[in-house]
Amino acid sequence: MPTLHISEDQIIELFEQLPGESQFKVLLKLTEGARAQREARMKYAESQLRQLCQERNLNWDIMSEDEREQFIVDLIHEDRACA
Image 1 (cartoon, one colour):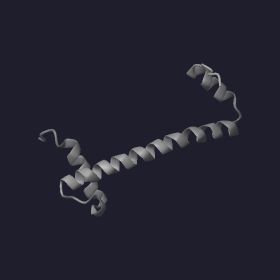
Image 2 (spheres, one colour; image 1 turned 45 degrees about the horizontal axis):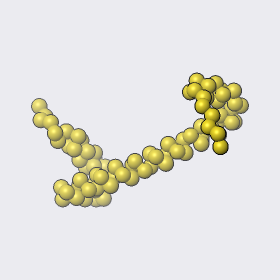
Image 3 (tube, helix red, strand yellow; image 1 turned 45 degrees about the vertical axis):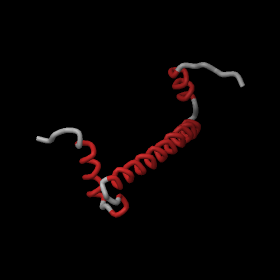
Image 4 (cartoon, one colour; image 1 turned 120 degrees about the vertical axis):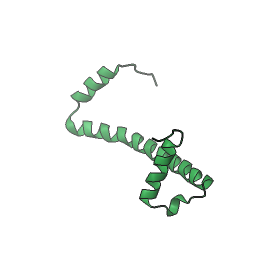
């Protein structure tokens, strides 16, 4: 199948010419991919957090939301001295 090269501005212009229902369908299709990528990133991040917890003798699964949040804050700041 030949490849069509059009600019972002052209895509936007074409999109704006679509009727509202068609615009809605296009937006739904675009968000499907974004949602799948987000879910994959979240699963990866959670697996990394579980691993970090395990290395520190903590259990991610039994931690409360507040404990998880504090754990992440501690990770973010572990490389710097706090005043």
